[in-house]
Length: 70
Image (cartoon, rainbow, N blue to C red; front, top):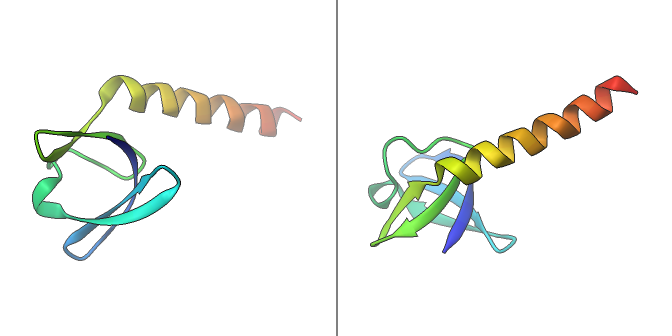
């Protein structure tokens, strides 16, 4: 399962999965996960997907560059 970290709230991490947000206990989210990261559920724990996160960051940067250039 794949998701995107939306935010952190108290003891939960809000992850967007298939367009819906879910509150997930911080206990099952790896410590290096940050807001905006693409995460994968691996063996019961949410971990950062480095490649997909970097790809998403590049796509967002390209969109921002296009907006500011006009």
